[in-house]
Length: 190
Image (tube, rainbow, N blue to C red; front, side, top):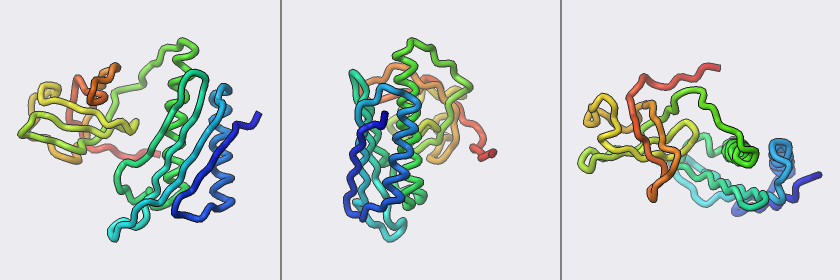
């Protein structure tokens, strides 16, 4: 069964190749979880910056019985988001992850972690004793001075790579790290 799909574009001309790519990714979501009732994909080009050019905003809404999974991929002016297929690929990767988690919860499966979560510090406020980490799973995770293992909070800076343990239950400000430890830079290994 093909999942009902609604695609909308704002400030860009729809292209048959992109529509086919979106349909292909939605069909793959249907293979991951057969309970999807509808899917909406909104693609917009809201801004133009002289430094970075056009940056695409992607919003994907997937309805499943009892809830709706929404991904709004608007995480800064990363240069790779100037390419529509890459922006779509990244947004669908987040939906796929969320859908797998939802499926595991519905089946009562227990998630086994492969290793420590890693990320980069994107904000640090030494004067207020906190910072934020963009984890490799694309969550923004808050941390406090007391969560830094080696106690060297003042030596941390934006861009540092860290290993962290995020609490499972979110607080009012979102996910929080209970443990943060600086590590060497992340390296791509195909």
